[in-house]
Length: 154
Image (cartoon, rainbow, N blue to C red):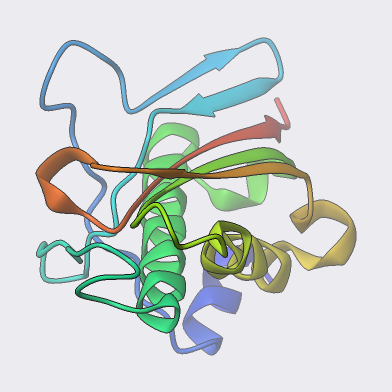
């Protein structure tokens, strides 16, 4: 089964691929790696998931936001690569969580994206390296921002 069919079978919908809103590219291929810029948790209707984990939202909402950012990453990769089947493996995810200084479960929040990639690409190809950090603010007040590096087939 191809990856896009699997995503549909999982009951998921890719949001529109985000376009650059400043001086950067949403993705860039260098050799056999595709790097994505930071992706926000954009829903299928184009709205953003906003908030601060630990004050006006909780870890579960943060997890859902990370999953949604992962879907946005997949949307960008599809636009860049033409097909998600060109992805050989997830190499690295870097996730930032908009949270209070007291909140320390950033890895549990970013699991929303990590588990999505594992479920879509499988345990071997879908699990790569990762960092999860807390920050005091993110663009447009979103809950998370996540970037990815993936290996691609020619």
